[in-house]
Amino acid sequence: MDLQSLRLQINQLDKTILDAFAQRMALCRQVGVYKKEHQLPVFQKDREDEVIRRIRDMAPPDMSQSAAALFSAIMDISKCYQQQILADASWMPPFRQVKTLTCVRAGCQGTRGSNSEAALRMLFPEAEAKFYATFSDVCKAVESGEIDCGILPIQNTTTGTVIPTYELLYRQAGYIAATVDLEIQHCLAARKGMDPARLTTVFSHPQALQQCSGFLRDSGLEQLSYSNTATAARFVAESQLPYAAVCSPQCAEQYGLEILHRNIADAEENVTKFICITKECLIPEEADTVSIIAELPNQAGSLSRLLNKFSANGLDLQKLESRPIADGSFDVRFYLDFSGSVLDPKVNALLADLSGSLSEFRFLGNHLTLG
Image (tube, rainbow, N blue to C red; front, top):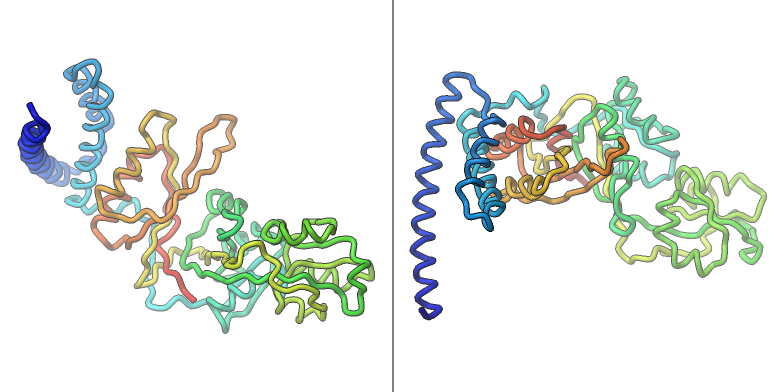
């Protein structure tokens, strides 16, 4: 046969497969209706394992794994389809939908003049600002009700993930209600009257030092980490020693420092994403991003099956971040952001499926980018 004839036969088979798929989904719909009427769960692992074993046995030996992967994908699509029929939102924590996100008392790590405070002011210009020594202290203040909202950095376009924030999202309670992107400007600043030739050491937050690594390497200054760019600037302002700080121009001005060099970051575009966390699950009316935590079994194809579910539901996966579970194994925990609203039946169906089939599932919020 020539190539065209072979392709014609494939096209005919594709039509047969598509017709069979449509028939299967129609039967799955009937199964979904039955489960709803009899209050049965959609995910039944024994049944799924039985189907995969049967498919492996029926398939030619050299195709058993491929056939298992194909039917696993088909069953994942079927489960989401059935979840849409059930419209089960029992996975969802109690939430309150809000037209406008407001905050009376907001908190962030560091002190006045920090980038975190700038993000706080972008989100809530009129809020009372409180400052804390660590990211964990911010989360604890949210959990205790001392503040209504906590502002934490989560990602930078130059240095990537802010790992401590991801760890806190897993360990401590709270929900993401909003995000804001802040353009970061770094300068080298020292106490007024300090001879630049005498400078020996520069202080700043580790991420700021990393974002300015090229300039600082050429400067020859010793680099020492500090808890925050603003607290580093305040420390330098109060010290009589030949120290400098990497901070924002606004921060240098606030603490009376002299700017020696401006725009010292390695990347011309340097943006940090901040999240706003709340104790109560608040969902803005125009929320367009869902954040979750997913823990997968260490099995071949588990990540592929997870990603296929987003594709099958036409949902745009914005971010996939992995972190080690830190239990002595090499298993990982995934943090995912994807476009959508939990009020969308397809999004609800996907999350209901994930909550029932993953070894661990956590809903982190349905939020909106502000500012």
